[in-house]
Image (cartoon, rainbow over all chains, first blue to last red; front, side, top):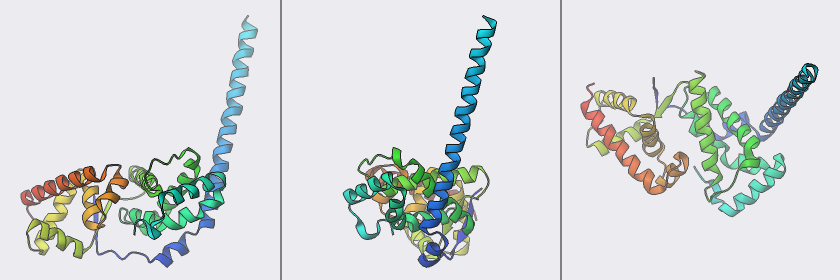
Length: 62
Length: 186
């Protein structure tokens, strides 16, 4: 469902810049980057544990 | 305003390369395109705060994916607008925002001149009904050309078409809109 807004008042350049400066973006970027790193390291850790368990299981069976 | 300062493409490439090495160097690109991206998003969502949130996630995504970015002769903004479009549609799917079309009376009057119709309240209702029936791709072209008054070159860069193709498709979208308008009752 499309919503129509007529003659909408847009924020000024000053208001936009005041709301979102580059420092805030940089912080959000660093936070997101560390979240991704954390997720990746968890994935690698659990992947390695899983792989080691499978190898261990194979060795026990044989 | 689409290309403030008319920065040359090779100057922009230098900035992109610098930003790839050091995120702090992304600042000039952010300064140059932030307002344009925000306004593009603002016109398509119903709440200002959501527009700020989406704009922020567009630039975070752009910074995260910058190492993979390759310049293919298009301004950096074309890539940013593609990310913006994808973030917008994601927020519509997640129901965080409502698909909105921002129109102003002045541009609507111009559209009616194209239709060879006079602008009345009844005609305006018919137009909104017709716009709502357009396919999303066609609606986007009408928005970009008639409500945001962008050039075909800019439209092409935003939607990923050549300038000529953008012109042809916008013309077809306008024909379709006229057709729907004529079939629609107030």
